Length: 433
Image (tube, rainbow, N blue to C red; front, side, top):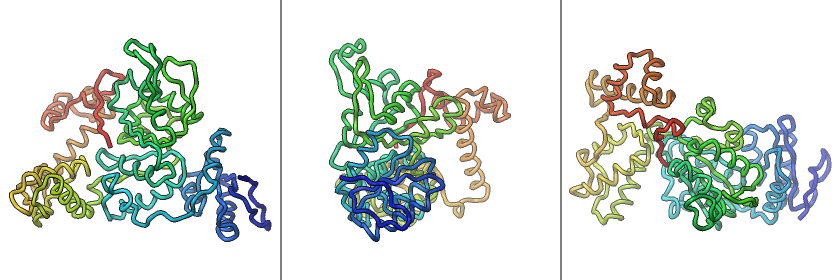
């Protein structure tokens, strides 16, 4: 392996396994020109970019043009060496055009043909080809874990472990021990030493779902691990190293959590190098017929039911619904419909969802009432989240009488405790991707 300085203007591209190219905001065009020359003059040479103050769009551009990976400055020598070694012997073959054909046996399928969905799908080979961290954002049920799995299965780490972790499901007092492991006697019930999830993911990918639920103490230790690739098991005096790629996901507004001092800004910047933002199902309704056929076929086979499709009216009902739980809610609705169906075709009566319908099927008053109800529910949930579930503060922010707000909450069956943070003793309302 040889790593050489990038060639100057007029010089030939050297014969090397890896060329390391430092790129800043003002030298982006030089890097673009170099990548084009490498493709023409030395197609077997890999280019590793060291980026300083680059935007996400600039990072994606150099990856699109042929850089196999990049390292954000400042960086550790060990990290640079590891990324450089990965470039030696890198296979330059293209990934399959239809990524879903590769992923469906493992990841359960990534289904959709809408522009919003295909835009994110098109980025998967780029994100998988490099080894940087990825932050996946989106409402609950939009498929954040599926996209994270796709990145892992398309990457060079595919033969190593895939370890998903729902940070919201782990008791606060056990999070550090779960992530980093613990020694025997580290705490009262630690009767034996135990490896953590980071050790379990060695060489592979650690997926941290609902990253916003991590307590601040665990956030600080996670940040150190991301920066140094070192961690210390609970109760141990020995540092350990790990080669693990971290992909994080959240359905919460992390910027809002930072403003309320519930999420570390430096950790956010470390995670937010490359980002995928997934669209809710209501913004890609054209995917609903394809999703419906996929899930009907899947559940009919799973439960040995003779169901083959849906009536036009049943499909219209699916398309009209807003799907607040997104694809997860959608799949559950189809599963129930397949089990309830009395014949080969699912009818509207066999689809158990909320009473939403197309505006064309409603009177003006009915359509207006439905929209007002949706607005009230969404507004109350958002303002309670912003106020940590405090009804008095929420009523003040909404400029509404506390009693009136409480009556609206009772009308829509909204419980304030769902929106209280764990720091205030409540149970946070979050769900896995």
